Amino acid sequence: MNFIKNNLANAFTLANLFSGSIGVIQLLAGNYHITAICIIISLILDFFDGFIARAMKSNSNLGAQLDSLADMVSFGLLPGIAMYKALEPFGSQLFGTELPFEIKYLGLFITLFSCLRLAIFNLDEEQTYYFKGLNTPSNTILIFGLYYAFLETESFRFLFENSLLLIILTVISSWILVSPVKMIAMKFKSMKLEDNYPKIALLIGAVLILILFKTVGIPLVILYYILISLIFQKQLK
Image 1 (tube, rainbow, N blue to C red):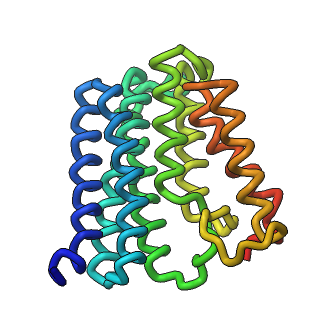
Image 2: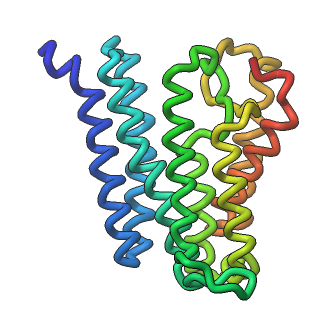
């Protein structure tokens, strides 16, 4: 019984890694619908592994390390591959110049900075009730959400038909992962209404965006999340 109690959360974490790995493989194969399903599964499992660990009081250093390693694939490698796929049609052309390498590999900078962000998070004891920099699951939703919306509805065409804009997005995405900007975390220090205005504003706005914009609203929710976090910077502590 103790074995199950101590390792149930880790099993959810490994399932997150398994789902994320399938998502990466399917994305490389061009099956972005399956990748979207894998991301949703990984997000659910990532939430519940922490919830189960806290509920069963089975938090451990092993679990913390496994969580980051799983997230590195599901929410680190996967968005990097999504940008890799988005840049792939442009070959080695940039500004009308032939480069000695294909620019699609620049998309993997998102993966590098996701790794750095996860390592920083593991060492930073300050990020209890807020995040410092955009968390990797949110960044994955933003990058893959933009790509998915483009493939499904041809939204954001201006972005995916311009290699320079995609590279700029890659730079911004990489920077914001390790930036000092405080981001809302859905962890409650108290149940006082005034202490939770940022979370309430985030939830209401996110629901409205998804209802109004549907698929296109997925990446817009993350942009709204960043905006709300910037507005409530002083209350995040």
